[in-house]
Structures are given as C-alpha cells and as structure tokens.
Image (cartoon, rainbow, N blue to C red; front, side, top):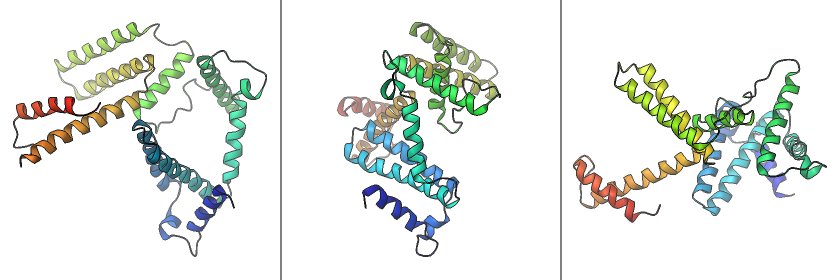
Length: 264
C-alpha cells in the first residue's frame, strides 16, 4: 500500500460509524471548511518564514483537508478522491496546451492572460446562454485584500487598468485626500468607512502594479509589528514593569531600538 492509499484508509477509518473517532464522525463540509482555510494560511506562513520543515508538515495538514472533504463527498455518493485527482489532471492539461499540446506561449505574462481567458470561456460554457461577468467566480469568502487583487487583475486582463504606476500613486493620494476631507467634515461613520475602503482598494492596486501580493505584504507587516511589540514588552518585563507603567516616550524609544536589534 502506498502512502496516499494509507492516508485515504486512515481517513475512512476515522469516519467509520462504529470504530471511528467521535469528533471526526460528527463533522461535515461546513464545520471542516474553517480548518481548511486555517491550514492554507499556515502553509503560507511557513513559506513566508522560509521554514521548510514546517512547510512539509503544513502541506501534509492541507492535504488531509482535501482528503477529508473527498471522504465526506464519497459518503454522500457525490464523488471520490480519485475524481478530484482526475479532475485536476484534466484541467491542468487543458489549461497548458503549450506544454501538453501544439500551442506556443511567449512568456509568463502571456500564459497568465491565456489562463484567465480560458477560465472565462469555461465559466461561460458552463452557464450556456446566461451572461457571465469577467469578475464571476471570485469567491466571496476570500480575504478582502486577496479578493481585491483578484478583481483588479481580472479587470486588467480586459484592459480596464491604469497605464502606469505613477497614475496609481496619484489615485492613492487622491483617496487619502478624500478620506482626510471626510474626517474634517461631519465624520459620518458610513462615509468614513467607504472612503477608507477606497484607500485600501487603491493600495492593493499599487501592490499589484508593483507585482507584490498585498496579502503577503500585510502578513509581513503584521509579523514585523508583533516582533517589535514583543521586544518592547520583554524589555519592560526585564525591568519588572508593564506597558501601562511606561510612558509613551519610553515605549517609543524601545520601539526604535527594536528596529536596530531585530532582523528585518
């Protein structure tokens, strides 16, 4: 028995009505979905940290999520794990005719455009005569930053985009000015949220034009903030003091120290 078959057997045993795990037997697609998302983020985190040992383990955890959902589907006679594998095999071959067929692709950018065009054709074919937007199929459950980047990328493939990064920078400045103006006015909560959202959306656009993944960039910023904040905490703790005890000036000084002492 190979390793993949062993994993499938373990999953089936966990769901066995008699000798399976009580917790695993109670789960369904909805209850498992949050764990699937969490495992995907843990894979991304291991990659960001360049921790290959953790990545190996996290990829295993993510694979288990795929096996779990396939097992649930098999129990409902919807599909099995092999159908998932056969489906992705077929899709990858269809979407890479320059590798598995006779077509040619000039570069990675052209391949990305061809990929998006083929996915659009597939969505429209599945919908038959119903109109399908270029933006269709982008999951509402994606994190907002990632979804914004996908929406912008789809629009850009259709020619709806800024011509250069300088124009994007001007748009960011414009949105910041609009937010500043709204803050100096009536401070309507709904308007403030809308203007802040526009500013964030423009920043994602800037990240896209810089060929930076916005979600990954923010994860890096989060990690950097956490490391520096803990540096402040730990140094105050060494003095038997808390954050509440220290003045803002003292905390700022430790924060500046953290920029020098901690690796970027």
